[in-house]
Image (cartoon, rainbow, N blue to C red; front, side):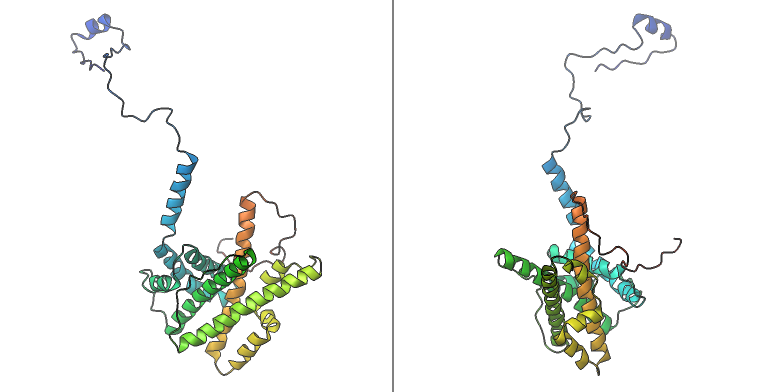
Length: 289
């Protein structure tokens, strides 16, 4: 495009008479425009999907997952003492995200230990760190067991990504608790499934499992009840076991709620009564509501 010099004051009238005011003279050899075309082609579905996957991967990097675990752990302990489980579910979701990334448990535990965020405002006590790691390992082992159970039905080989080996001492005791809780959860799941079949669907196994209390789980498992009674002289170990059972049950609930959300997102309609209607999960008081 030819640059048109601006007219001086004396030439203003003459210039306006010589050419129409809105007419612009263009050269034959036009430079290519650097501006984005008005009708630019939108990104393809595959490109948009790849960009979205990359964005989500950056948002849920292992360090971010570790921070979510660090922040939610202590708050979940505080809320559990008041009868609320919302933040505990966030903790389980964060650990599950690490499992699905996948991040080996030993690496995820190291990231949590070295996380620069200190939501407690103090150094956690040894028992608190042990409890946090035990919950993390319990969620991993629960997900491993459920995955292997599903793959066994499909005829596939299950694989574990726990990545933790026992070093004796307290670790062996924790492994015993975790193993007992995981086996009990799967056993109860199978029992409720059989009850559903025998009653022709009248007793919903999923509803029964997600609404199960810690005491009811202990009653359904003689081995777990025996282990619980053997810890009478060990209040700390007894508290760890009770909370492990609670985390195991809550893991089932998190998986079921996730399934319901995914079904809703895919357009499926749940015509049956939800197990969360009526006596739903207690939620913490929110100021201003």
